[in-house]
Image (cartoon, rainbow, N blue to C red; front, top):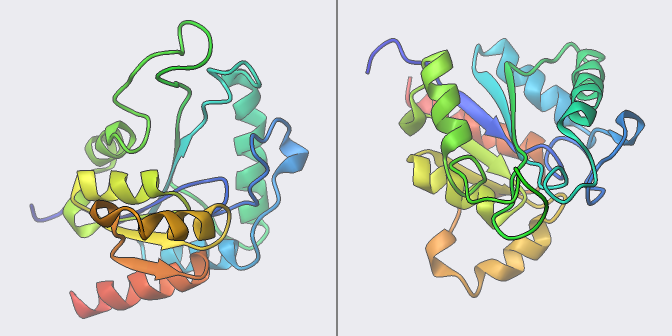
Length: 196
């Protein structure tokens, strides 16, 4: 549909900031080198940058949804130091088998489901088929495939572990494997340039 926008959907932990296995405090948010500059490149090109993050630490009782507010504020502050920003932050607090009510349930938002992408597409008028999903886990890759977007696996965070899993899983092949978010954005911008 004409007039719809292109977005890059970014996993948070292990893709934008260092993977710590459940960030609990704002001071634990440390950007991966080059991540802010990569997002700034998307900003310069008027490509939407949307964070989509599974946060099952909420379901497991490690953090609350209220705890995520200052964590995400810190993420935005760290990006702003380089002049970068994200257009939307979405998270899924659920887990299908672990945790406490009301969060221990199967939902439409936990990646590889596409709820977070679908909501952003509706709210921000995004064409998912022209958009991209970038992350360090196979659930990110599969979410991209499920939404009809182009998927990029980064080798930061759990990326190398996911790469090893790919050898046993032919169905979840990413469209691109990139060293980090900088390399992913380079691939994405080349594709966008080729298609415009």
